[in-house]
Image (cartoon, rainbow, N blue to C red; front, side):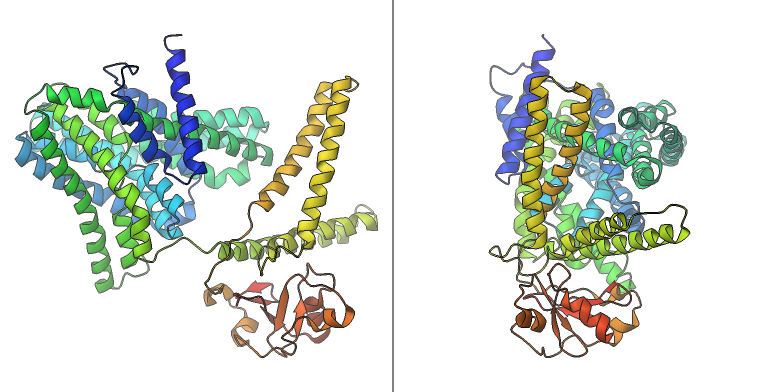
Length: 628
């Protein structure tokens, strides 16, 4: 009970605070750190409160990095590789040595020890930066770069710290510097190699283990399958876990079953939610212990606090210098396609919140390191300072720079395009299967399959348009009625369960099917696009070489501005309106009863239409099924 009760209380506190933070739109990392720091001075909290660095580096870091890596796009990493490499390696080294110069002068310690502290405070946290960035709605490319940076910068920082520790122990001779450089290279390349080998091993096992439960269990073991062997041979376990996670996430749709992927995604979300919020609470709870240690050491709390503030200012200044300087050089050199824009660089330069890795790395400093207590206090000050100052002001800076996340309607438009493409591919495959003629398929089955595909595509398109709440779309009607049916079906299952007339496993299987269908309906209901003042356009590069879109005008005078001419004549109600860009005919969408826009194309062959909904200007080619 001496161990179980504190763990339970910590976990329960994390769940309550993080849930409240989500409900009220607050930052859970910042709130947990602040509450933890305040609680550390309460008599109920054990004193001293210390967390073994191995617990963080072995218990928390591998699954957190692996979970983040497995949800990171390999395509995005490849596209932004130059920017990510610049931030995760070069900027970390730039910050480490910049901080080292300041600490070397102010704290009067060996330069190798100063470099070690620089490596400790150099990497922004993998959780804090992206969590805050997503919450306030930064541009997607900025979030992708920050995610890629935070995945790899911990490895650079930890290798720098370990290299500096070797220099502290062995002196700063030329031979030692060469050895340190060799170790740095091996840690990076060796970690990547071991991570790739771990990916190959796990993917091989996954191909033969198709059951969802053991497949998810293997996924939970994967971070340590990569991390532990790499650390054993003195390579970077962080790089190994990240490489393994990115590769497995990219390959999972091919080598895993659909049921295993769904189960794994849900389990990993819950696991990372608890772990990533727990680490920030642990940061705060160590505040009193670290402060007391510095108070009792030389040079004392007051002087160390001033030095810590100087290091905090240095850390916060070096990142904008690097990013904005790189953006300026890139513009001069014409590298505009490989770097962030000036505004994007500005907001990324302010997204440098530090986290638990900084404190864990500080705890790894040898006990005989000069002014070790002061260095740990400086790491705490930088961590809390960046979390509070940059974390709370990042949204304000983004608004001042007029930077925001993608318009939800843009996501809805891309979703509709992708869903239409997949439904078309499915329909073509259905035609192929029917042409083979191996099995005679009843016509009602074929009709049901085609209707199901059309309904899925129409549900996606219905998220666009004016979304008048007084008008119920066919998709809304389907979800409302099907939800009522599912509720009745579930009540019937529960009544049969309570009577004990059905086997428990049979009841669970039926209930699982009902839950899956209801979860899909709920997801559609919560994914409605939000209104925006911006005109919804589709960039010209999304035409994918369509000659019809290239030749079509952007606008044309409508023949019937009041609505769909055929619906008005037939007394029907439309859902959304489409404008033919060749003759100006206004027709209704495929979710409408009349489907007059598609019928107009079938009758007259006019290839391109445009949305005739307020605030929308996207176009669609009926011939090539292209958005543009």
